[in-house]
Length: 146
Image (cartoon, rainbow, N blue to C red; front, side, top):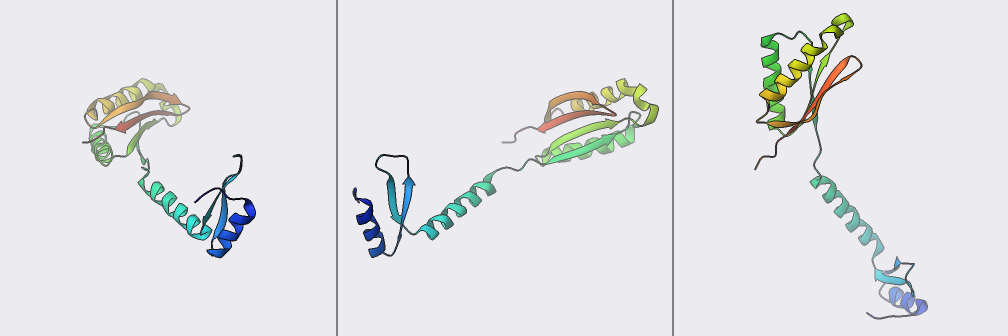
């Protein structure tokens, strides 16, 4: 491989029944390569697909509470939250205030903080409880397992 003028490079490509592909047009002189362009595109797509498969997909699971959630329901949902975090999913726990139940927003916050404390060994709080309209939301991310 060497440096050739365009006409000679095209002749070499035709002779080998391959394509002359411009690699970097801004270089002086422009850089081109003799290759099978369709095969190059196929390889590139294959590499992109492999990279996409390796990328981790973030799954967000939700737990919905009311401000006056009783003990049994809380425990039931806590166990689900524990399972989700063990599976590696992020957890979005929220208290939904219906009608006039917004007066119990301190109870909702206490409930979410209790959940964070109970799930402390499985995940860490990413966002503390925050009131947005009629919902108080908190995010918990799973701890990395070795």
